[in-house]
Image (cartoon, rainbow, N blue to C red; front, top):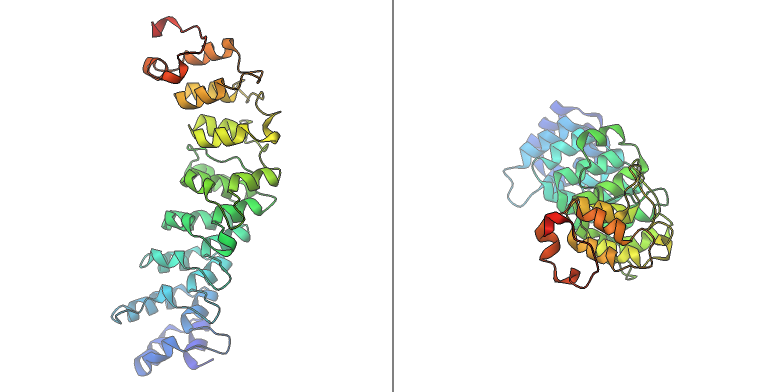
Length: 316
């Protein structure tokens, strides 16, 4: 290590200032561990040093502190993710959110590292800083959602569009939180295939997580139906694991069909209605569900024309 590495490690801001004043090139010097002073400062959580370095380097064209790499391809954000130091991350991301999307030589992004280490609340902060981190593809073609589901202790309860910030604070250490968060932010990532042609929903089924429920007793089919995710509903209905879950009511006695109807998702109602072999998809249940739907959702859908359903009076 050179003098700047050591000054950054121990947080000696005045010394860092003097060294950079005399030898600014040391800012980019790599140590025997393959780290620049910036990486050392982030690894030891020296926010004041990071903020100072950002300020000092802003006049250097083409130099971005957040994009500097060590010999392993790690940016400072990778080190921050391993330590879950939000204040240092905030200082770095405030000037360069794109740095959160860098992939190291191992195919890891800061978000995938946080997920792998079960740092669910920190993962949430990364996504808040830059939602596009959900699209990053790393090792074996996998997105952060693939990484999350491959962890056996992550429950698939997802697609809940009403997940609140207060709930985040209450259950930030829950292993189920991160997977819910990922689906909540961008359901499209649930269908990105990895190099083995597996989408996250397939991995969820493979890991036995499809049947997991949330506090309202909603399984994956319920949550997909509730939020109008017709692709997830179609996929779920073809899973063997879903056979016993199609008839399961939530704590209020609602099935997936009722949840779709009460949230005005006529496309999902149609898909569920075609599964005539499912117990809860009876005409009685269907008629009951339509009570909550807008007339145009029923009458303007040509796929419902051939269904022998008693249309409630309000649709007449």
